[in-house]
Amino acid sequence: MEVTNLQRQIMAPFVTETLNALANMAGLKATVGEEFLDDVKSFKFKGYAVSAPTHGIIEGVILVHFYIETALSIANHVRLHMLGVTAPEASVTPEVSEALQEFCNTFIGLSTADLERLDLGIRFEPPQFIQNTEDMMRLIGHTQEIVCTPVLVEGVGRFYLNLLMHDKTEG
Image (tube, rainbow, N blue to C red):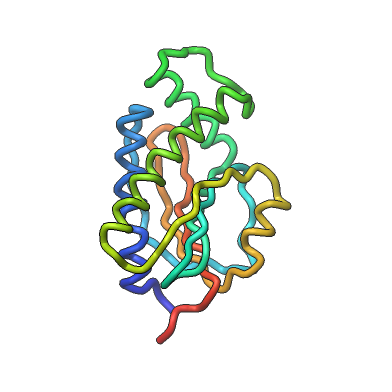
């Protein structure tokens, strides 16, 4: 199996808006790697994630999945770029969590609005923030297929944009 055109079309606004948000909100440059289908059985929680459940033509979840170090660095860059706060946080404090939530809410909101304008028959629920393995396991419980797009942030690390699909792609 390989990534389908519909899956690419769904992921494209998330890729574009993620790169824009990194530049505009955090002053960071990033590139994306080639998308791939990940193995559901070996998919593991990396430390911090944001999910937006989808309904309609695609039942599943859009997931932004961070290693905790990458999440912290992006949050600290957002705090510096947007608020002028220069003291970096070394853990997910309420201030760091707020910065990550604002960053993710921005690009997820813009992405879902772009997809709704395309009228593909996909609806999104508001983003939910995942900070533990139990919540992640509930999210991936019905997942049959995972589309992954790596985002490589210069000087920071990488994270993933994922489409967790409850049904396998036909054909």
